[in-house]
Image (cartoon, rainbow, N blue to C red; front, side, top):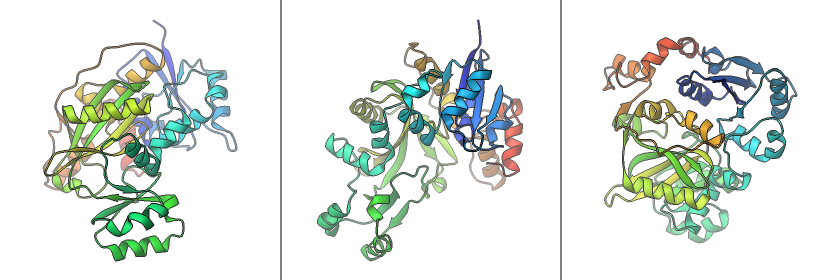
Length: 358
């Protein structure tokens, strides 16, 4: 059987290394990288077959064309937000060079990427979400009745970056006053007392082809807005129902990681935000039994497959587990619940990360 040749055009993304780790399970694949950085972590991986540095002043489309002169590419699969959006914008030109993985239209992609547009979409489609103020006009009309605490969130940032919590109106008003274009860059969202619970999906035309559900472990890791040190996979019918309704309403194509929250008291599930890309716990989903990267390739090539099953397990990266153990904090079992074995098979990215490469 001939090898399938996959091109990741955003090899500088930290998610490229996670995707590589998942694709390493399939030895019939050859994976090639384009990068805007000379030495991203993914370049150190022994699982890639070639690395191509984008030339100064060269567009990404021109970079893909250059690789196509040297390699036969079966599928081009961007993995991070900016690159996926780029290819959504120039889909017709890109597909003259290589087949693209399933990606959403620019309009729908922008709707979920921009937290303000997403909040308006959720409201319009009667999907559960926290009360959110997305414009100055709305704030002037409804801001006096706003309950505290609230969060301000950058409209386009991800991974918890830039989120601030406010417990008093005076501090919030001061923050808004410091930014003349505040509502062009931020939203205000009611803080939801409860616990985070996330759903990762691969979809076609709004239908879920694969999913996993996870929540964070260890209370201390959940006090910030960053990803937890460890996660636990579980099955939760209401989370799946809400996520299914959201994806169907969007008509979503491709991968996404949906951040939800379970409210204290009534246990209601609300949608917080959607990351329209691969995610940092991708190898956790693999450990639980769902190889999203491999399935995204199959779906992109038009193949069909049954809905994969996954196990209710705990997972953390080996580095995270080791750091917790060294600090005498609770941690998952190193040999059974981490990717330690993969570190031995592909050690150079680990050493590069420890050396400060990002």
